[in-house]
Length: 414
Image 1 (spheres, rainbow, N blue to C red):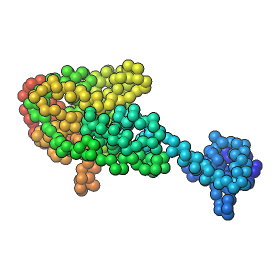
Image 2: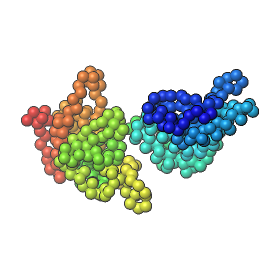
Image 3: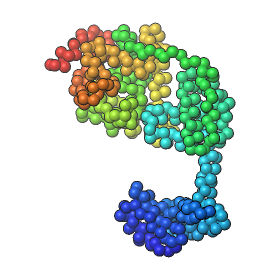
C-alpha cells in the first residue's frame, strides 16, 4: 500500500469519472459514476475472489483506510471471511430493530412510491394506535396476538380505522421481511373480518340539496371561523380535504387568483391549478391572517401550545368539526363527509348546465379515452366561469335569497 496520494483522490473526484485505483495489497479507491467515493478491500479466500467496503471517502481518510485494510487482512489470513462477517453483523443489528424503527424505515422508503396522503394516514394510524403498545418491542417479538389486540381496541373507536390500522401493520412487517429484519409476517393469517366483522356496504356519496345547503351554510360559524372557511373552500373549489390541509401559502397566488396543487399532493400525481373566485380569494386572505407565521394555509393549532415546528392541520380535526356541525343541524341536513362536498359540488355543477368535461376537470378527474390522449387543454378559463356560477349560487343560498340560474353555456359565450 501507499501508491495513492490525497491530491490524486481529489482530482479524480473533481473529474467526475468512474475510476478504480489500486493502493496496493488489495486496497482500492473506487469512484462510481454517481460520484460515490469508497475504499474497497479485495482479497481471496478458499480460491474465491471477495471484496469488502471499508467506508466512504472523505469520512475514511487514506491513512484510516490503510489501517483498516491491514487489520482485515490479518483476519483473512486466519481464515475469516471479513465481508461475510460484516454482512452478518449488519443483519444481526437489523434484527434487533424495534417495531417503531422498522415502521419509520418503511414510511421513509414507501414515501418514494406511495401518495403523500397515504403515507400521512399510515403514519397517523401507527402513531395513534400501534406505537403505544408495541413500538418499543423488538419487531421479531411481536406476535399475532399483539396485533389482534390492537385491531380490537382500535375497532372500539372505528371499524374503518381498525381495518386501516391492520393494513398499516401488515405493510410494515412485509417491509421487514423484505429487509430480513423479521423472518415472517405475523399478520399473514389475520383477517379483519374475523376480529371486527365484515365491512359494511360501501356508503353512497350524497348530494346536499338546496334546502340542506341553505340550512348548513349559516350554521358554519358554530364550528369556528377556520373550520367555516375551510368548509366553504372545499365546497366551492371541489377539492379534496387532503389537498387543502396540505396547502402552503407559497402555492397560493393572490395576484392571479390561483391555487396550485403540486404533483405530490395530487391524487393523479399531476400539478393542478385551481382558479379562485373573488369570494374564495377573500377566504384565503382571511385564513392567512389566522395562520400567523405558518407556511400552511391550515396550520396545526396545537403548535401554539407547546408543539415545536410548523405543521399542517390533520384531516381528522376537520372531520370532528363536521360531526359537531351535524349534531347542531339535526335532521335539517344529512350527515356529510369532506368528500361528500365534492360530490355535492359536482352534482350542482351539472344541474347548473356546466359541460360534463369542464365539470370533471373542476374536480381534477383524469379524462379517459381519446380525450386524455389528444385534449391537452386545461380549461382554466372555463373552469373559472363554472366555479363563479357555483359560488354565486352558494352565496345566495347562504343569504336565503333566490338564485336565478343562467345556463352556463350561454354565460360562457358572452
